[in-house]
Image 1 (cartoon, rainbow, N blue to C red):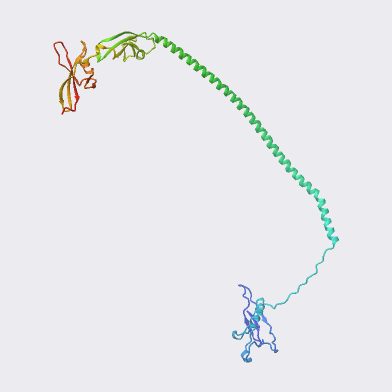
Image 2: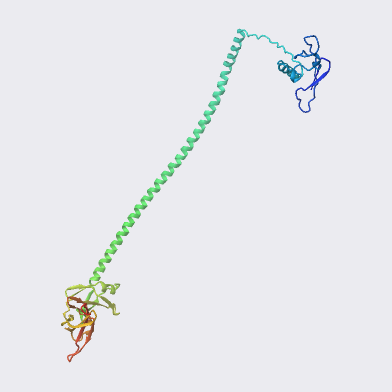
Length: 360
């Protein structure tokens, strides 16, 4: 708060700048300002009787309805004084005149600087060159160490390369030696196999068939069995294998056995051949086919008597294996065989059931 005396000597309180919490408040007493008419109060700013202005207001303050257009300017000036708390006092500034140095002093300073620089330059350059030389020496030693390490590594690499070449040469020699040994072994093996083959051929050349005989009776239609004994089989040879592979000439043809049997007598092996050609005694045939009419629906019955059956032959085997042609159709054998006999002995007949659509 600010305390200001008015024209009548009374003290009015006005708010000042807000102080910080805990700060001490100050009381300021504004001196009375003389007015234009010689009184201590402020000059009137509005028309009216003095009684209407019996209450004095500080400069810049007054009733709101009676303020004039000068009030804001007075208020701003008064506010500045109130905020500062003290009347504004202009400060005087003592400015001294600057003085320039004389030319000889400037020249002396520059000369001194040049002298100092010229004097210190060799020492500074020597220190710099010494440091640079030490750096070069360190770098040179580092490169020298690298060269020595590289030389050592190259020497070690050369030693390893020499060892590798030597080992490769040894391996190449061993490979050639193995190849020569393999070729020699294969050559000896082939030579041995050739000698064994020649010996086997010579020994096998002595093996032969003896006692080729034809069986007394036919085996079946047009086939007779022949037998022979394999002889001169060398020791160590498989007689059965030699029997299966040893051909023999029968009726002008070379044939291997149909089967071989070991008789169990010192390697005695017998070979059997089923000869189905050039055996006229085993060639039976049918006289004529008699049509007996329809046997059943779709089947016609034929009869025929078997011819050229030799004495002692098995009529059932010969009858069932003798083929025939009926109405242009070939049949390997009859449907069945019967013996209708006679005063002369066996009379085999063949019976055929032939498909015939004419039989209903």
